Image (cartoon, rainbow, N blue to C red; front, side, top):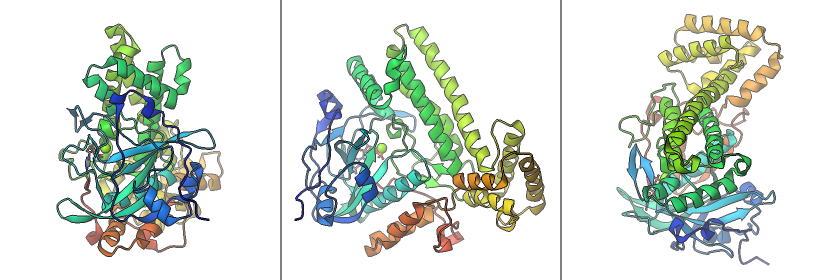
Amino acid sequence: MTPNQITFNFDNSYSRLPDIFYENVNPQPVKQPQLITFNQALGHSLGIQNLESNELLAETFSGNFIPNGSSPIALAYAGHQFGHFVNQLGDGRAVLLGEVINGQNERFDIQLKGSGKTKFSRQGDGRSALGPVIREYILSEAMHALNVPTTRALAAVTSGEDVYRETSLPGGVFTRVAKSHIRIGTFEYFMAQNDHQNLKILADYVIERLFPEALDADNPYLEMLYSFSEKQSKLIGKWMGIGFIHGVMNTDNTSVAGETIDYGPCAFMDEYNPQSVFSSIDHHGRYAFANQPQIAQWNLACLASCLLSLVDKNETNAKEKINDLLTDFSTKVNKAISKTMVRKIGLNHKNKKHTEHLKKLLKIMHEEKPDYTLSFRHLSDVINNEEEAFKSQFANKDLISDWLNAWKTLLNKETNKTDEIYNSMNSVNPLYIPRNHLVERAIKLAIEDNDFSYMLELSEVLENPFIKQDVDADFSLPPKEDEKVHQTFCGT
Ligand code: AMP
Ligand code: MG
């Protein structure tokens, strides 16, 4: 017998918070939902049951059918967008179906994106075009496989309805899973209203849900800020290591759970260029690749300023503590980046000679603009006396040969076995990343031909980014000149 609904172990703590935190709003049904894909492994790990029927999956993950125990809400938040404060943003095209508790007693948000209007929609239609749905599905799962903390992709469906952007486009609904959808902008929402009572409620909620260890500290609010800062520094270190450019690091797109969230105009850098910017809306390069650590610090300052009076009733003391936090973040993030990067060349960030040698490589790379991913990936092959693939990335052969010889000398002084170094390097230097042109190809096929096979194939390859697979070499190669993607769009 086919079960008549998908079952979730819901426990909706956010909807037990005061009304001002959200709007109770159901997803608006779509005309003809069809399942593109459902992430079965993730579904099972969340303890969701009765996942066999595609029809039921499409009905549920389009918002047409609201499962038992769900309490759909749109969350209120504000945020700094490109440095400018906007006092009300909120879930304008998303609803939180609820929070599930899995077998390990962990709590996750299940959110539908593109599910219709809410009171936060402003001029928007509450819908999502299919392109961004596919993009977020591929990107967020790829990031997870690359060992980067991120929101996850549970399902993607087509809505059977068109949405109107500059032209008419097929619509879709995306299901996102997150440790929580609370953003720095959620704190700013209450701060902007001078609502200290609800700020405290939010801070206490966040500590209990995301930073329970902070409860034991003398100053739990300050401790929470330090824990967040630690997570955020590691996250940025990981982004830098794989050439990820978030593209729109606004405070409303910064999760306090330390996960990568909101895959809008994000991109992976092909050629190494620290000033890389892809987002069509980032006119001044605020969110360029190399700026991400400083922007994360700026965002942390926004969060900290909301918590000032909770950190210390004495304003001068509170500011001093926050200044220390921000200085500490700077140290932490630089260390995280250095650790990640030096590991990519098989060496140790604690050794000054090693960090200097990394800098030399980056300088050469900056001048020559080789492929970021393949340069590091092929460096490990040199250990097996295969130098060609690495060297082929560089035009000035003498320069890179000198660097390589010095690298070998450093490596020879290491006590670790060479095969251990080789394996360690290959475990942090991916062969497959969601290159912009591959993602665009998947989107184009889906939108123009209703063909999702390439999206699914690409997603499968990206599940194992560190292992060479028996697939078309195209999946690992940079774009040809005419395939290059120069700009990415929010596409909301
Ligand atoms: P984002 O681009 O995801 O960071 O969104 C910024 C803000 O715009 C958020 O408040 C979104 O909910 C809202 N938004 C984006 N697209 C839409 C849409 N199609 N309809 C309504 N609100 C939207
Ligand atoms: Mg956003």
